[in-house]
Length: 303
Image 1 (tube, rainbow, N blue to C red):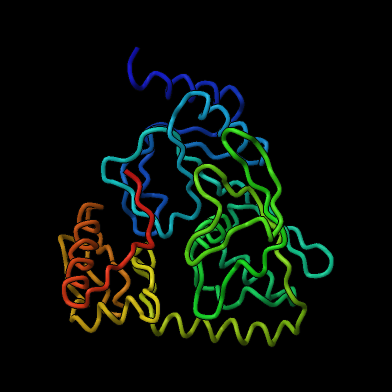
Image 2: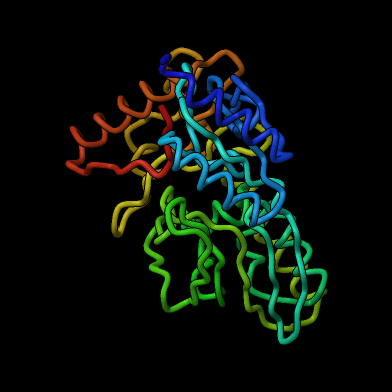
């Protein structure tokens, strides 16, 4: 039996179930940095039931599971990944409920959700307008921006475990930490209910625009990147540390440290994922050598 036969059998089973399945799909098309080799299987469930079915079947086949949302904060090896890549962008429903509650699928593009809630006169998300991920990714990574944090706004989350199926977790049952949470490969976000505060739409829009202007002034916009590379050390800024060492513009192959913000690595169109990995390691080693601070990566890597 070949090593890849379980993947072939699983792909056939998923297709028979009516799911959208692709084999050896280049993942560079799905990441904000524009890098990444092929997925052995790429599947795009459209409902929570389909998501649960995909995860259960992949678990039964003993194949690795990777969850892909908007593809930000992610670096995928040039050789790609084996197993199943679950693309959650089909879980894109949004429902506005009473008392400021908003239910949204894991695949909802977060900046779009921010703008929709602002237009409805619901305050809370506007400082996160520039986070280029999906809602599921924002929850899983506990993504933040300046004074914004998603955790306090969460009412409940429906998640799926490959082994145990669907579960609903309330805010107190979820561990939100700095740039991490209870969620991950063994507990995958399907949807969430957020509780926001009613306010004047014009006032919210004014704040939203202010946050977006600040982001454009201080971070690289309109370029291929994976977002912030390193977590901020306690009491310090990773970007400022890198800038003070004169590493803005430093390059490995087709990857370089952004001239706008030291904590971003930019892909100029000719980079490989290996270039980015090499640059990350060189920057990290330089910072450790000269400041004794060991930077921790914020970006996820798949290989």
